Image 1 (cartoon, chains in turn blue, purple):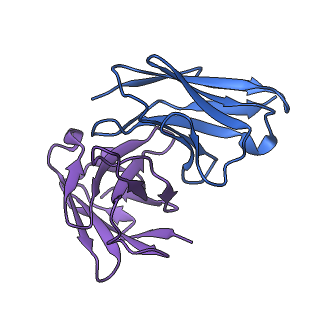
Image 2: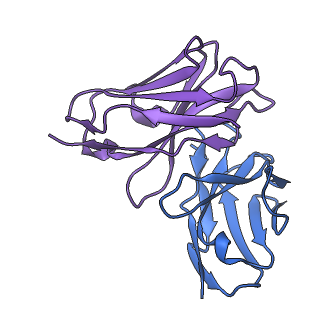
Length: 107
Length: 124
């Protein structure tokens, strides 16, 4: 299976900060990398698909990028509603796999 | 607006079969270009993709489940189902259903719409 390694596993930042989460794939997955936000007690919600495409309705302060095997999710101007756990997921080849998750908190 | 809703027993005994149904509203499950998938999350842990089914019945399963999983689709009821046999306490989790648009290579893609999830506990 394709392994995804996220870093950091948790972070604390202030409202208005810029934060970046990284997801490294164990092999080439082209751009088939997706990002989700799961708030406490809720189902995950898609934020970014195919590495850099913003899902419908997601604020433009979210962006995704790629540099080789490393994918990134960046939140500019962090807001309180952005708190939760972010997961990356590859859909390059079944079985789809997820990263461990990164918990984002407001300090 | 597309909505997905999981239903089924919340408590299953060890060695028995877990059965869940996902009812889709707001769109036809027979639409081309979409897989319908199942993902689970043990309490406090990460996400595991179980598999996905196309409206024709074509399936992808996660091999980690050792052939215990079966998925089916009923286009007349606009729903799809999950069966997981020989369950143990390790199968206790929140089970989510989700729509996954097909990728260019006809694999299940990102989950763009999810159900709210249902907690299934395996216990005697």
